[in-house]
Length: 152
Image (cartoon, rainbow, N blue to C red; front, side, top):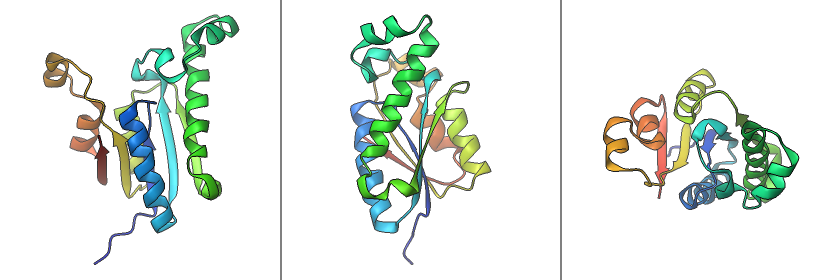
């Protein structure tokens, strides 16, 4: 039996591992002609410079850090969507502003009946944080209502 994923949820944070996950999602989307929803959560507590190198430009345009994160996140989502090239009509993006990524991913995957979740695993956490809090990819893998592909 061949598995075909028609609806894919792709999470990105701009990290190298997330970019590897995007490349895998592009391959799978082409193979199955899947609908893809790309999400980025500004609740991920990342330093804006990691996904938007010119923070001085962002800070000159905005008066609070949330606005900086939102603009950086929108830019990241657009850049990620463009990686799908010819299949733009099957790709949607969502900027998540008020929910941690692992909570949003698991909730929306169930509510909207996604077949597959794809995300990267940075592995850049202290041992204490991994043991007591877990990582986004670990939390998603433990609670997801569908298949999960974690890419390094």
